[in-house]
Image (cartoon, rainbow, N blue to C red):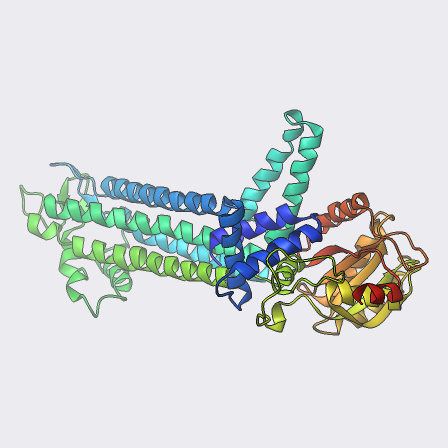
Length: 512
C-alpha cells in the first residue's frame, strides 16, 4: 500500500464507522465481484478496493492531496537546503583581494565537525527512542507537531460552536487512536525529509565551493592564539580527518610543509615563512582545496546520502508492513470476501448469482476461536450468545468467563489466564443500555496488558433481554460506547453489535 492508500483507508474507515452493515456489505461485495482479477493478499485487495471506491463513488481522494503536499514539501526542502548550503559555503569561503585568507579552521568546524555532531545527535536520539519509548521529543518530530495541535485545539472553543467543536474533538480522538498503528511510517517519513534537506545542503555547499575554487583564486590559512597548537598538532588532526580517504586520494592530505607555511599571523598580515616584503606563496596557499572538498564529501554528502537512503527504505518497508489485523480492517476484508447469503426466497441479487471465487487466506479473515466474557449480570444464556457470535461475526466460542466489574483480583486472574492463550479473540459482551463506566474501561485496560498490544478485543453490545434472548442495541447507546471507548486509544479494540436474537426453530424455518 502506498501513502495515499493508507490515508484513504483511514478516511474510508472513518466514513463507514457507525454505518449499517446491510448497506456496507452489498457495496463492498459488489466492488469485489467487479474486480477482474481480485488480489489474494490483504494489502493488495484493500488497495484495489480503494481504487474501485474512487472510480465508482468518487472517493476518498484525500490521499492524493496528502501525497501531493508531501511531494511539494520535498521540493521545498530540497531547494531550501541547496540555498542554505550555497550561502554557507559563500560565507565560509569569502575572500577579498588584500584581505585575510579563508580560515580552514572555520570551514572544518562548520562543514565537518558540525555535521558529525548532528549525525551523532541523530543516532543518539534513535537509540534513546528505542530504550526510552516515552521520552518526549526524542527522535519523533511528530510528537512536537501533535503537541502544538493540542495547544491550538484549546483555543477552538472561543471561535467554534459547541456542537462543531465536539465533533472535531471526537474526530481528532479517533485519528489518535489509529495513529498509533503508523508510528514507523510517520517517523521514517519525517526523518527521510530531514535527511533530504541535509543532502541538498551538502550538494549546494559543494557546488558553491567548486565554483569559487575553479573560477577564482582563494587563499587558505589557519591561525591560533594557543602556543602549544603548532603545525605538528594541526597535521595530526588533518591526518585523523583524512583517514577514510588517505589511501585512495593521498594528494588530498595536507603535507607538513603546506601546514607549516600556511599559518597566518593577522598582526603582521603575512604567512609563516613568507619572504620579506611578501605575504606568502600564492600557489602554495591555495592547495588546501582538495582536502576541504574531500572532507565535505566524506563527512557531509556521503553520510547524508546513506541516511537518506536508509530512511527512505524504512519508509517503504513501513508502507509494506502496515498492520491489517485491526478489527476495522478485518470487517472490510470480511465484507469483500464473504458471499452474500439470503435466508428468504423473495430476496434476489440484481447482479445475479454469486460466482465461484477462491477464498482469501485464513490470516486476514475476521474469524476464528474466541473467548466469551460476560460483563456483570448479562442475563442471556451463553449458548445463545455463542450461536449469534458464530452466525454474525464468524467467531467460534471456545471458553466462557464471567466478570462482575467489582472484584478486581478475580478479574486480573481471568485476564492473566486469557492472556496466555495465543490467537484468541476476546469478546466482552455488555448490555448497551448500561453506559461504559470506569470499571469497564479498567477491565479493558487489564485485558490489553495481559493479552498484548495486537490481540483483538471486541466489545459486543446487545440490547434488553427478552424471551428469545435479547433485542438489538439502540444506535444511540452504541454511539455512546464507541465515543467513550475511543478515549482508550486502542486500535485493536472494537465495538460490535449483534442483531436481535431469534428463536432457533424460527431461523431454521426461514432458511427452509
